[in-house]
Image 1 (cartoon, one colour):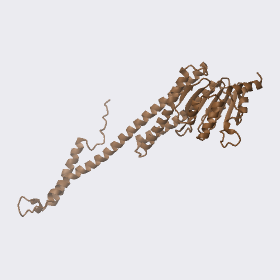
Image 2 (image 1 turned 90 degrees about the horizontal axis):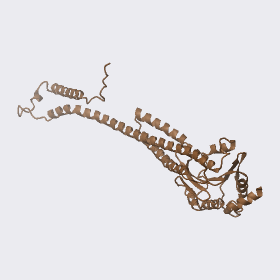
Image 3 (image 1 turned 60 degrees about the vertical axis):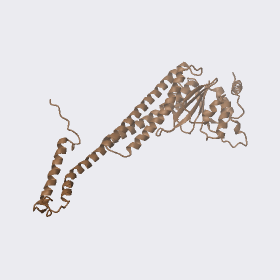
Image 4 (image 1 turned 90 degrees about the vertical axis):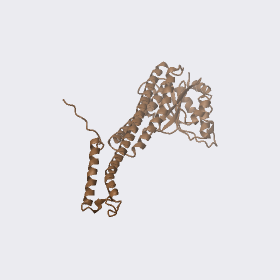
Length: 375
């Protein structure tokens, strides 16, 4: 088949107009997104940014697989209009337009007659827990992706295509879909390593010292763990659907690789569950130590209070000042030559007796010494 005939066939198949989107006609104020295209095959690849539909037609006609990536667009009526035109160009179902525009979708898989629609949550930054929606369409010889922000974690996939590493150039478009999803899933592992380091630091802080900022740090980690869990849990179900369900666009060999990707998602969920349990345990340890610290303070204050009660009692009794001249029963010690020293000695003796009582009861000890076993 000549290039011209293939050009006509693809134009008829996609029902493509003369320009990429209708809003690109003269006089339109709508800014088109940057469309990055990588077309490749066993013998090579071509990578470029396109603005005209005719360029896409040539790429589809001459290369086995084409990856069309649409750079982020600002949300609004213009974005919806552009996506609707993309839907017409690639014969996408009209229901997917809302899913692309409303970027708070859960990870899912939807199968249509001519394409497969996959939504997943992709990390924006490996140092912070923030995700974006990646909308992916799988066709017979193309993969179409929509992003929210310019940054992504798919550079490893692009490098494999450029350098011809692995099997990606020898496989069809379904393998490219797998490679993209696998890169998205694997991008969670560096962030999990960072979370583990943060948890180790907080664990040392909880066990060795008391820091008032520890609860807020642990709550932040716990929120990050829950946010990651909400992102990756639906992805596991979506991958399970890709593996389990029979879909014409996905080969059996690719399902084996998707199974490995599913295992990675399960491992991530297991790690997140473990981190959540560790955070809960550290919170309990922290509050237990705080409670023990408060109990120690209250214990010291209580002991001080108990020690001062006997002297206060003696001072209170002899502070009533009953006149001893009126009755011989009214505090004869007030006229005694050694009355004041005797009162002080009485206070000291009673206080020491209270200290001895508390000591033999074991209430003054912070912990009981462990008994060493005899050899």
